[in-house]
Amino acid sequence: MKSKVKVLTYTDLECPFCKSFNTTTQDLIDVYGNKVAFVLRHYPLSFHSNAQLAANASECAAKVGGKKKFASFINETFNISPNLSLDTLSDIAVDLGIKKNSFDTCLAQYAQQNEVDKDIKSAASIVQSGNFGTPYSLVYGPNNTVMTILGNQSYSVIKEMLDTLVK
Image (tube, rainbow, N blue to C red; front, side):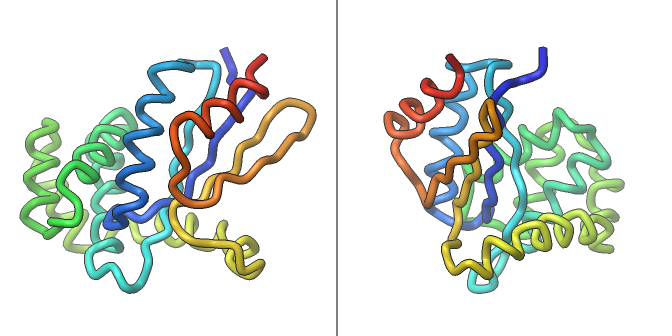
């Protein structure tokens, strides 16, 4: 079943507001299941010293371990954020059953940087508008409806928005 509603979120894996928003998103995934598609895009902020590394690490987790490992890696990264380092990110990968040598090689070579750059580039028009920080979400609904979630909004605010679109 294809979802009628999609939430596209730009996030920074070292951002405390994004960490909180990720928890909210997980709760919403439990409520809506396949009715709402939740999509993550990277937007590592320059003042978060390990955000770029973590974004690359999550893409390496997807490349080496598969798409299902990506979501788990994101959640586990947020669980330990802001305590992110090469070692902690590698430990997450190993804990998720991702091959350590392949993951570490991918990360050391920044092999997935192009994936992160694509996400950053896709946010360019939003950033130019001046209304951008992380988390930043676009909600696409039926009849070409587009709504914006600025920052870390509460569960109830987002659920109310999604309820009107999922009907």
